[in-house]
Each structure stands twice: as structure tokens, then as C-alpha cells.
Amino acid sequence: MHEKLIEIKNLSKTYSGKIHALKNVSLDVYSGEVLALIGLNGAGKSTLVKIILQLIWLDSGELVLNNKYFGKNGIRDSVGYLPELFKAPPTMTGYRFLKYMGELSGIPEDDLNNKIKNVCDILDLTKWLNHLTKKYSKGMMLKLGIAQTLLKDYTLYIFDEPTEGLDPMGRKIVRDIIKKLREKGSTIIINSHLLSEIELVADRFAIIHQGEIINIGKVEELLHGKSTYDVITLSDPGLSKWKFFEHNSMWKCSVSTPEELNSLLNDLNNYSVKVHNIIVNTLNLEDLFLQNIFKKNVDCNKK
Amino acid sequence: MWTVIKNNIQSLAINPVVILMYIIEVPVLLVLIFGTKLEVDNGIVTSLIILGKNWDDIGMFINFILPSFFSLYLLIHSFLYLITTASITHSIVNNTISSIILTKNITRGKYIISQYISYNLFIFLHMLIFGSLMFIILYLKTSVPLLEEIVIPCLYVAILMSSYTMIFSLLGVVIDSETFIAAVGIMLLFFLAYRIENITIEDGLLFNIIKYTLPPIIKFEGYNKFANIESLEYTSDYSLDMFKIGFNLVYILVYISITIFIYRKKDLT
Image 1 (cartoon, chains in turn orange, cyan):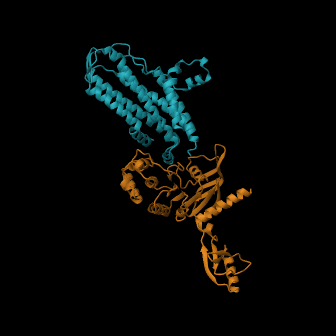
Image 2 (cartoon, helix red, strand yellow):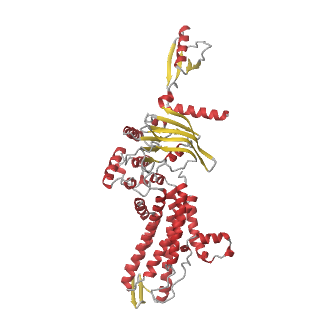
Image 3 (cartoon, helix red, strand yellow):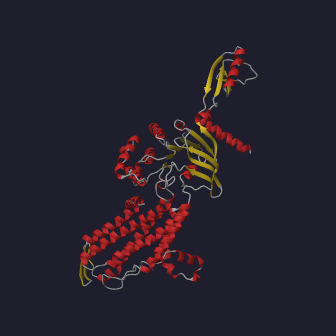
């Protein structure tokens, strides 16, 4: 594991003294990793990101930035940020907007035009550069927002919903960009609802629900041992130990661990019941996410 | 900071409300250049033809129509600028671009100051250019230098708007509603401004608080006093009282400091 880039300790944030956006959140972000923050709408993901960006101030807790990676200005000028629902000023052309952002980032005039051209070529945005942004589609606007983050090499990139509204080709381009940034050693934090998309690029996931991190880890760690197995037979085996249900004129029994599967197969073999099929149901991030949310809600209701 | 100022000035130059001002200004200047014939003798207009119409009652034109038109023109500009500057709130508080800009190498304080300077610099330049063009055209036609009558009223509008922008910036970081802020501005411009100078202790605490928290330049005497001499050089209502302007600067510093203080603590959700 790399060094800690950002350390968040017991962070809490309340809006208007009533809405608890974040409750005692602790999280470490490591240099060179892709961390995905996932959660339902209003879970607190954007608040957490904005606290890291110091656009929102924390009520209690601590946010520690590793000085080795951040300059004297802290987070400022060290981060490429794509906000949620990004919208460039409608009276600007794409080129003028990128030039403005490049100038604010302190990129020399000579380099800036080349940078804009390179970034827009990657994002397939070049032919739209001289159009006013009010004529941009949702996908093009998002690409423009991503383009402004790529004009400079930053320590940290924060993308809030970077693929929402993009077509499959656009999503592939963004995934490739994220992979390349990681290869260069940058750290990336992604907020997204498109779990199948970020499952392909993220190293770690933090599931946020009602202002709390309810699960965090690498995807393989989180999903380890989470597969289920369906054993299908053509007739009812009549074993009281196992619950078989009728399913499409056949009989099905579901087990959740390899040990249980072995035990079931042994029993079926002992009673000479022929196994028609075994289906391995691999859990994906979306299933895991929904399980976590469901479990958390059940726990809350019990309390 | 300069990058933000430069960009804001470029954006303001193509703002729809500002374009409306150009649409009003250009015909006025064209009529002055091509449609107006003036004969002047020692500052007294002896013959006046506008768009082919010969004005017999020159005194009426000089003393009433011209200043009325000019006052109305300045009032329209003040009103349109008021609508434009109300958007300063949106640009500093409620905008995804602001959240990106604040991750760049610019502090919140510098960002507020950049916004304030850019809006006011644009208004100042716009009014100065327009006033100067009017001054040059009339000077070439009459040989009478109408500096106080034309350029200074234009600059007065710019100074007046600097006070409004200052109030809007402060209200913006507290209230965060462009519509509300524009409404406050209109109320100040059309209703309170006429009355505010005459507020006394008997008017109650609220009115007195309003009177003393508003910068002195807002307490003007109105746009409806017209010329009182029969020449092109009429008495202007828009004289620049240097004491008031100096005092205004103190207000600006205090207001901007409070705005920055609040903005630095504000959550940009």
C-alpha cells in the first residue's frame, strides 16, 4: 500500500443544525489509488468531497493533507476537480472556457494551446471547441468538464459523476483516462452511481449511507466469499436437511458457501440424486452495495 | 486575479442586458453624428436641426428635452446595470464554475475582490467610453466643452453602481438569491434614494439604520432637476462631491471586508 495522501478522522458535518450530512466519518486516501465513493442520493458523498476540497467546512473532526504531496497552498492548485452537474458558462466557447481554466491553473500561454488540443483530441471534443457551450449536449458538457481537469498534472483528481450522461464510447474513454492517470501515479477519487462502470476502474470502494461509511475495502476483499450457488436437480431429492424449491419444473437449492456446496453434493451423491446443473452466482458491486444498504436499513429499523 | 477580471469583463461585454445597452447607445450616437445640425454662438445655440426637424423653441429643447432625455438615459443605464450586477451573487456563491475556480490558485478573498473589480471596471469603462464619445461629438459640432454635463454624469452612474455592487456582494453571500437582491436594488434606486437624505430621528430606528448603513453616494437628490440656464451648459445634478466619494470608498472597504469575512466562512454547497 502507498503512503497516506489524505487522512480524515471522525469528520462530522451538519447543515442548518438539523441535517446530518456526515457522521463521524474516518477515511484514508492513499497516493496512487482510485477510490470510489458510492451511495444513494443525499448519502453525503458530495459533502465529503467538498470538505476535502475545502469548499465546505467541517463541524468537527480532522482533515490531514500529506505535505509531501501538497504544496504550500494545500489542496488549492493541486487538484483537478469535476463538480457534479458541471455546466460551463453558456456564452463561452469550449476553447475559451478551457483557456480560462488553463490560465487560472498557471499554464504558460505557449503550452496551453497544445494542451487543449491534446486533451480534446483524446476526448473527441476538438470539432466542438469553437462552438458556444450552450449548444453542447449533456455528454459534451461532461467531456468539457473532464478536459479542464486534464490540462495540468495534478496530485489528486476528484470526479463527481464522471460518466453520467456519456455514451458507451465516452464511458470507455473516461475509464481509459482514469487508468492512465493512475499509471502516472495520481490519486483519483470518484463519486458515482454507475457501479458497473466504476467497478472496472476503482481499487477501493467506500459505501456511504446516511452520512456514514458502512463498508470500505478493495473490491475483491469486499466480494470475497460473497458468491452463492444454485444446485438444480430434475426431481425432488426429499432431503429434510436441505430446502429444495420447485423452479421451472425442476428443483433448486441455494447455498452460500463452498463448504455448504460440498456438503450438499455429498448428500445428493449418497442418495443417488442426479445433479442437473450448478449455477455460481457471482456477486457484483451493485449487489454488494444493495445488500449493505438493505442491512443498514434493517439494523436502523431494529434500533 | 487578473485572469478572473479579464474573463469577467469579456463575459460582461456580451451579456444580453449589456447588449441591450449597446442597442440603445448606438442609435443615439448615430443621430448625434449624422442626424444633428447645430449652430452655436458663444455657447448659445442659435439653430438646431435633428433628423430634419428644425427646433424653433431651442430653449425648451436645451433646458427640458435634452436634460430629460439624458437623465432618462442614465436612469435606464443604472437600472440595466443594477440587473446585471445582481448576478454577481450567482457568480460567487451558486455556481459550479466558482467551485472549480476556488480549487485553483486563488483565495476566496481574492476571488471576491476580482469579481467586484471586474464588474465595476467594466461599468466604469463602458460609461467613460460612451460619455467620452458624446463629449467628442458635441465638442466637434459646437466647440463647447461639455465635460461636466456629459462625462461626469456618466462617471456618476459608474460610481453609483460601485456602491450597488458592493451591497449586492454582501447581500449575495448572506442571502444567496439573485431575484431578491435585484429587488432590493430596485427598491433602493427608485424609492429609498429620493427619501433617504431626509430621514430624521422621528422616522424610527429601521429607517435610520438604513440611512447610515447605505453609502453616501446612494443618497442622491434625484434625476429630475433640469437645467436652469439658457445655454448648452446646464447645471448638472450629478456633480461629483469629492467628500462623498472619499466617504464612499471607506464604505466600500468596510463592506468588502465584511463580505470577504462571511464568504471565507461560507459553505459552497
